[in-house]
Image (cartoon, rainbow, N blue to C red; front, top):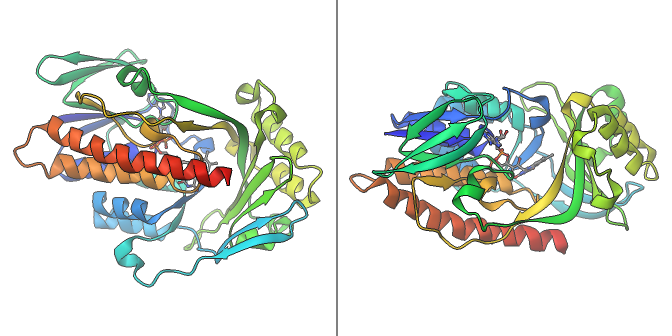
Length: 365
Ligand SMILES: Cc1cc2nc3c(=O)[nH]c(=O)nc-3n(C[C@H](O)[C@H](O)[C@H](O)COP(=O)(O)OP(=O)(O)OC[C@H]3O[C@@H](n4cnc5c(N)ncnc54)[C@H](O)[C@@H]3O)c2cc1C
C-alpha cells in the first residue's frame, strides 16, 4: 500500500510517522522549502494532541518532543493596555496527566523538525490537482511537474488547502474580519525587562476596548534553547493595509508596533525588538460545517478539514486527526481501506466541527 500526504505542517508528518512505523510506504509533499522561520511560533498543545503524538511516534522520538517542550507557566491572564491584570485563571498540573494527556507548550519549528526527521519529504512540490482512477486509486499532480499514483491522498495542507476545494467544492471558509501580525523576540535581558512578568509565567492577552488584542507568551525551553517571546498583534482588518501579506517583514513588524503604540510603551518596544525573519501575518477564519461526502481515496486532516478561530486547540485537533486516521488504517485487519477512511471521516467531522463551534463561541464571548 502507498499513501501520499500533502502538507508538512503538523498533522501530515505525524500521520506519516505513524504509518511508517506500521511499515506502510508514505511520501509527503510540501509546497515550501524546508524550515521556513516564519512557520515557527510557540504553540499550546491540548491533551488530545499529546495522546496522538504518543500513539504515532516511536517512544524515543516522543521522548524528544517531551525533552524540548517549554516551561509550563502557572496559568493565563487578560491584561488591560496599561498591563494591569483584569482576569486570571491558574491552571494546576492535573495529577493523572500521564494517562489523560499532557498540556504541552512547544516551539512549532522544533516539533516540526522532530516530526519530519526520517520521513520521505519532497519540498517545493505544491499540490495542484488529483484524478480518481479505476480500482479506488488516485493520481496526484504537483507544481514541480511530478505526479504520483497512490492508494490514498491525504490533504493536510492547512487552511488554504488545494485538496479541499477539489474534494468539497461547496465547503466554505468564512473570514471573520480580523487580521493578525505575529513574530518572535529573543528573550535577551532587555526583552525580559520589558515583558510583563505574567508573559514569562504562562500565556497572557492584552485587550483594548476597540477590538485590538495582543497575545503574548514566553517560550523558555525546559532543557535549554533559544528562548523567545511570541507576540501577536491582532484586530479589525480595516486597521491593517490591504497589501499586508506581500509587505516586507520589517514593515509588517513596524505596522504591528504602531498599532499598539498608544498602549504601555514596553509593548511596541518588544515588537520592534522582534526578529523580522520570524514575522508573519494571517487573517482569522472559520470553516462552515460540511456533511459527510461519499468517501473516495482522498481525505482531509487538520485545518484543511476544519479551520477554526485560534483558541489554543486547533493544533491538538489536527494531531488527533492524524492519530485517528493512522489507527483506522493500521488496525483495520482485512477491511477495505476506504471503509476505514469513511469511519475516520465520520468521527473527525463530528469532533472537529464541535471544536470549530466551541472556538467560535469562546472567541465571541
Ligand atoms: C502565531 C500562531 C500561533 C498559534 N498558536 C497556536 C496554539 O497555541 N495552539 C494551537 O492549537 N494552534 C495554534 N496555532 C494554529 C496551529 O498552528 C494550526 O492549527 C496547526 O498548525 C494546523 O496543523 P495542520 O497540520 O492542519 O496544518 P499546518 O500546520 O498549517 O500545515 C499545512 C502545511 O501544508 C503546506 N501546504 C499548503 N498548501 C500546500 C500545497 N498546495 N501543496 C503542498 N503543501 C502545501 C503548508 O506550507 C504547511 O506546511 C497558531 C497559529 C499561528 C499562526
